[in-house]
Length: 366
Figure 1 (tube, rainbow, N blue to C red):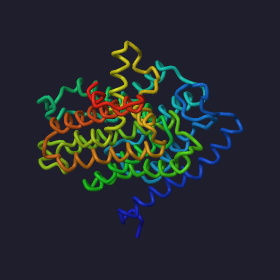
Figure 2 (spheres, one colour):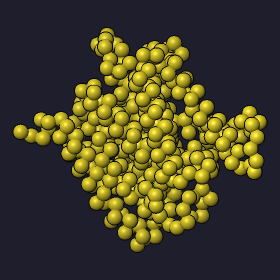
Figure 3 (cartoon, one colour):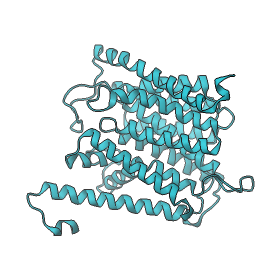
Figure 4 (tube, rainbow, N blue to C red):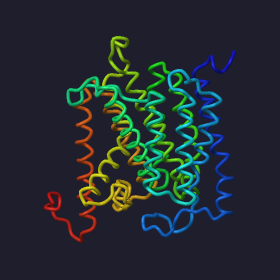
């Protein structure tokens, strides 16, 4: 009997091998980085560490994910392997260049656009409907391409921006990929579940070295790849649960709302900081210390506490989406946005209270 005849054993092998490749590769990457002085930039006022730390953990994540995908993945028909890995390699190249020597926002933007276009046009990784949000169902082909490219680029950047403290991006990515893996298993989608588990294993091996005190960061090489795989999983999950003449009874209703809940932390954080920067007439890509993890750190939490708090919040959103999925996409998505704004307001109030010497009830209304 082959291991592929037992589904749970197949998934376990995928996770274990992916995790081992990542776990074994990172010490060598750390050694080379130290020998070549390939450290994180200490001159930036946004850094949370006072000593150089290699930021090439994404190399191990990429190698682990790619090797296991080529060895075990069975998603050629539904998600062409050549298209997906081509996109991953392009993002890996631009991420590695940025980690080693820096890359301008324009270069990164153009390469992300190229990757998104390849996935949407050649790989058919695209949304074909708004699923009732704003009372819109099917959308034209051209609008579908434009919308899908924008969403892919936004999510890729969202994971890139959330990678600001020890363990955060990897833990959120672990929650995202593991959740999609379980959902795909429930749907009987072995191919997509194996893709998600390939990333789960790679992240588990990496996080051993990334939790505080971090010995290595994933860098743009890892965060861009993580964002890409997450958005591919999300779009495919939504499309597989689309109500259509050939699919009268999707496994999960309100699939877009569930996908939003799964990726809610990086999505809302990026939406928030982009909006604030634009309102202040700054570039949306201008770096600052106004991300949600920076704000929680200001309240006195440690890196690991902040990471756990945000991961728990992410899990709560996922639970709410699954528990109340009969409410519909429009209601759930705007409910989630409302909760996010409420959390952001409470965080702002707590920061203001902490920064003042005395507490007054009026602070909650300023």
